[in-house]
Image (cartoon, rainbow, N blue to C red; front, side):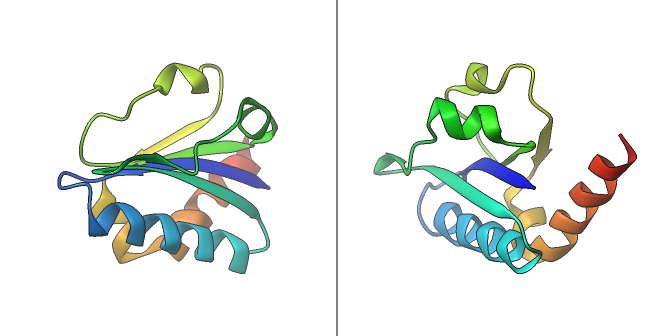
Length: 104
């Protein structure tokens, strides 16, 4: 599967970037492709392209604040979780998404 996502925490510093890396690592470890955009205090980094979004099977939004540019994901399967959920158990998050997508 191909995942894309966005992370954004309240402070926009550490958790935004830590969660992005944890999601990426968990997805790759499970055999998936994954690109995560961060929206932190220094702005948007690793901005997702239209092509990446179009090719994605699912969009993961891990955030504690409003995420900019949500209209880009219209019509896509979106998993919306708090930063702490993705931080505490990213492997479980990916496994839950896999299970849900396989049932559709």
